[in-house]
Amino acid sequence: MVLPAAILFDLDDTLISAHLHPREAWTNALRTLDGGLPDTPSVEKAAVEIHDAARWFWSDPERHRIGRLDILTARKTILTKAFAKIGWTADADLVDRIGRHFTEQRRRDTKLFPDAVETLEGLIDRGVRLGLITNGNAIEQRAKVERFDLARHFIHVQIEGEVGFGKPEERAYAHALDKLGTTVEETWIIGDNLDWEVVVPQRLGFYAIWRDPIGNGLPAGTHAKPDRIVTRLAELLDA
Ligand SMILES: [Mg+2]
Image (cartoon, rainbow, N blue to C red):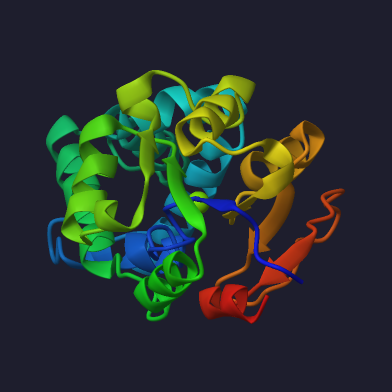
């Protein structure tokens, strides 16, 4: 397979490990409060309930859209819901402290995937025009781009919170193509979200690659049919 004129990359869990292993991150966040929590249930059990509340929260596209632009309020909603289930009082200070510890835990856990930079540089060497298109809050997403010095690889960096629209809105993809100066037929898109980076882009005419960083394979019951699945980013250079 010949490389395309351009590739649009997702950021979180595509180039950087932002949201992997959420239950462990909640467990670690609770552990850092050592002693500051009610005795029951155990930290592990509380983390399971918080993780379930988070999955409920993020499962709704509209709640997701509002929540990712205001992550602190989203975390408060998730924790308050979980607390009600496990019988903890939703004390504002405790909710705030757990939310902050989780955010710090996430920041510590977020790393560039080891082959990210070599892959981006390899594609640029081969003449591929690169775009970055990420959903989320302007300050948080821009901080990640800067922390990992990513902007230098991309002709266009598009952050939902900065431009005011995001995936899966059609104009998000159209705007990125316009900035790259390529047509949909000559552009690939890659990301870990099956709706945002596979199903909707395919409907628009993209060649869509699903990024499966842990190698779990497609979730049971999905109707998505990615054109290609990659576990390691460097597989893109084999094209
Ligand atoms: Mg992603």
